[in-house]
Image (cartoon, rainbow, N blue to C red; front, side):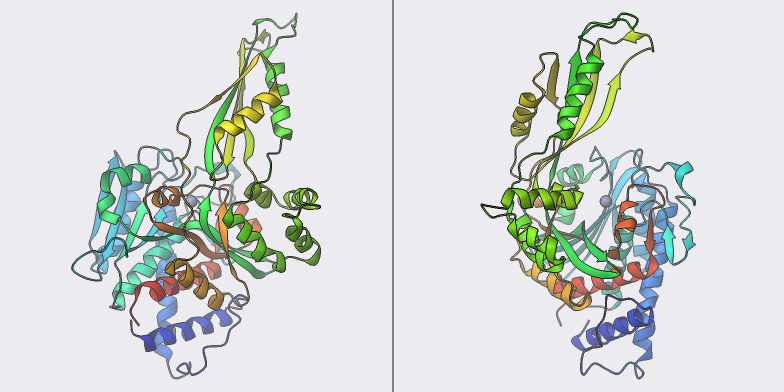
Length: 488
Ligand SMILES: [Zn+2]
């Protein structure tokens, strides 16, 4: 894609967004850009790819990849078929029966240079659904009031379709690439098991080795109808599980004893539930809050700025943590009791009761530290805590000084008016941790402007994506990829 054409594409996109009444663009076409009235073919070209991408998203939602069992192979074959139509050879990488990834590459030169390559990655599996709680078929891709509904509409089939759109656009425009661009759709992200990116890297790393990656993980945060900021994920917390085991004497429920393990477990869980780990600023979280303070109202902005001060720091940390569960979890290790198990019959005191604690550690913090604190807190000889195997590994953060991070923040500032990009440490997990462990500068960006209400539906009921936000995200993603990988 040559420079001139790029300007036209931007101008066309801006017009469409304004026509759609989208508040985020807020920008006139660049001065000196080709006049819109004189350039209808390019204007028409914009919705074409966005519209196609919407149809891919609908098709992907209709392919049920709820994990377990996932069955991502069907989605992988569908994607390979879409790529094939544009003359792009895709390779299916089988992992376990019925579960595969799919990879494709646009080459910049005969000799591959993995350290320069850009990887566009998204996962095909989704979390399961509680169908009876949905107002529409979760696998129907229904369109209602400007939204597309369906499991995965945001997480992560929206980004998957947007990646596909950017990748195919590069191919169609015969862009002169300055680095290889690799498309990868992964499996088993939601449970990180035998078909996940960990196994994919172990078996097929050479197929998609890259120096840079764009993945899910960040967000375009809307507040009062405007984009407040764009969180670009450069790091993520680390998950672990601890099981709490209370033991006692089983017996007849008609004659209760003091060592009933259900009572001891409940007391332990109550103490743990009220515990708050100390605040610990990572470099990325510090940068995040520095950028956030001026965007918040004066009151909360003042508390954010005071968090790191000697005199008011502790109180400020408390106020900020209380204001938002996200901020609370960005500042400290968190421990959430998630499963309770006890009892065999209504009239039997069991010999054992168990709870699972889902722990999210700040990168750099150790599970041993959390165990020490919890053991001191529970302080009950009848209760034992055990760390479960398969805890996550802390990955080094992606650099905030890389060329790619620079491009992402530049395009965001052009696309979302005054809303800045802020480095973001997600409390949730993504495939990027595994990539960062392999020296990839991976950044997370779900590029669709979404409200808190829409974000909350992501692993919940009636997941949906506003089609205007989807189109905007497709456009932003294409611009980022073009700016980074195309020689102008
Ligand atoms: Zn996801």
